[in-house]
Image (cartoon, rainbow, N blue to C red; front, side, top):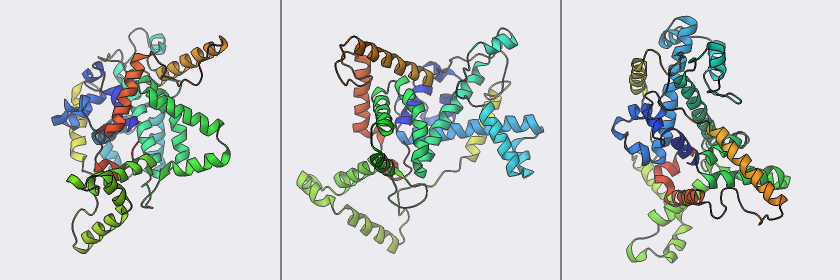
Length: 378
């Protein structure tokens, strides 16, 4: 949930980002034409999560089309009909990851192209697209790792998400996650580390790729206890909720048994994946028609209405500045104790962001039973 909101703050919230005809927001608006205005400030988590995946799929389909055509002079459909070998697919996939996605230590907007190709050689649209690929793939890898229960991979991804949280104003998420990682690696004893790693994610069903974050399970149980089985009217009391809470599993099993016995459709509330093939085809056609070349093709001197910031580097700069400030305070002997990064008194902007995050946590960012019981995306 925090990661999805971070993506939204980078690609949708800034006014300039929404003006780019080949940017994330415009592609999302093509996928959901009836919800384009709603997506700016009122998008629920489920909408964010689905659109992040759909926009990423559209851009990756386009980059495959571009690279396959560059190599073979065939369209992607024609090349697929020839049934390429796994090694051929892997070779192109590796090249795409290195060539079309922003990577570590790569400054997309430095003056290298200016020096090599002369003035006006940069293509800001192409650079923006590489940055979009990078952040969307980070999100999808985090989601996949959590669903698969791969806590080791989750830990390797958090160092990228911590500065992202800080850069977009999610200071409490950033500082708490940083503190957790520091404690996990440098403070806790080995046996406690092992216990934490084995219990961050849980798998209630025992099925592959069905791991869920512990707090989501707790929220789902709270929803069942307070909303479905907590009583109504004068019966909706604390005593009634406590009494019924231990019976939630029995109630759930009874409902499932009745549904199976009577062959009722929709035994669960999980929905099937929609067929997006026609929609993706239409959006890809619109991308091609937008200009001479698409977002994954280099055009010398092409300018974008908005240049996406390097949010990871911005977040790292914030962390470095805070670390330096704290070190200087300690040297002067005026350190006032364990004040968390981004939560010091007097910082009105960060305090407001913290209050906003608390409100999101309390309000659940529009979470519904669908969100709490299907894929457990962060």
